[in-house]
Image (cartoon, helix red, strand yellow):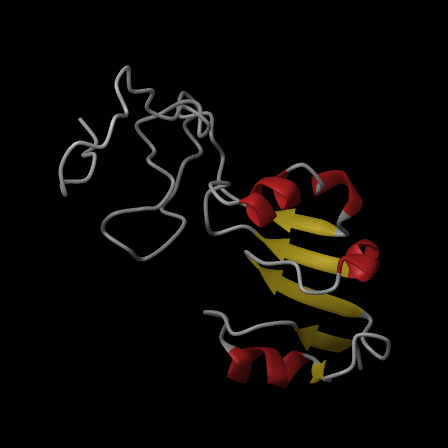
Length: 124
């Protein structure tokens, strides 16, 4: 039986996985590691199945997105919204990947970022 380690708390159906795989707690014993959004064991990227459900907006996720070729397998959204093969990546009504933007790195640039009151910047 294939040994799988689930590296962090996530949305995976562990009961379903337990029917098909032996779940282990040691990355050295595991045939595959499953990581969702965060890479806990970069030394085992060659046997990691990376599920990228969060956009690359923080340093560790930006790093992970730049490492896709080093993972065994990567499961993520398709940022090309012109393709017809799009499907909802999460069950959320408000997906984290802003499917209306072709470029997930299209951040808002503000001319004046001076803080002069207690309000916070709002996205337009």
